[in-house]
Length: 231
Image (cartoon, rainbow, N blue to C red; front, side, top):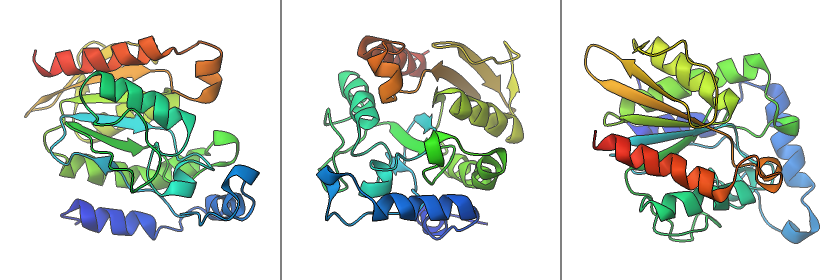
């Protein structure tokens, strides 16, 4: 049984369960766009990042090929990370509005970032087996983050992973069945605590450029998350 986040993170970064993802994360590193030419890519599975006493858990889809797969930190080095960080900063959950690299001084308060899949998948589409292979890591992470009260799921894959996570850990949905819809909130209860799950569109470039998700919409998701901590 893993007893610390350090142990879990070491296991995550050594993972080779998914041959397709191992190949793809290395291919992405070997063929960087011109703006990243010469950079040394992380090109390994990504652990979570944030405040270990966090009450808010944010679950994303997976690292970006030239974001987290390059920088070695989740939601770092791409537009999705910057959109998310602006929302966190606006709600006093982050000390910076951008997430550039592992040494940029970013610190998160009361929030921990993770993902349903730890390696970059081709076309951002992990297979069902790849999602299942990462699921145990999510369970271990959740069990070690003992103060979580609100889960924010970014995108449907993350939402489905969050629902499965809570049910696997003995929580039952009080206002379900849960269905993905932006800003929907579901209440899950176990014998020991209540967890609130908030759904949000993912802050991908595709969603933000088409205005399916605006900065104001994501800011509001985290405003609600912070407010729910006090209810």
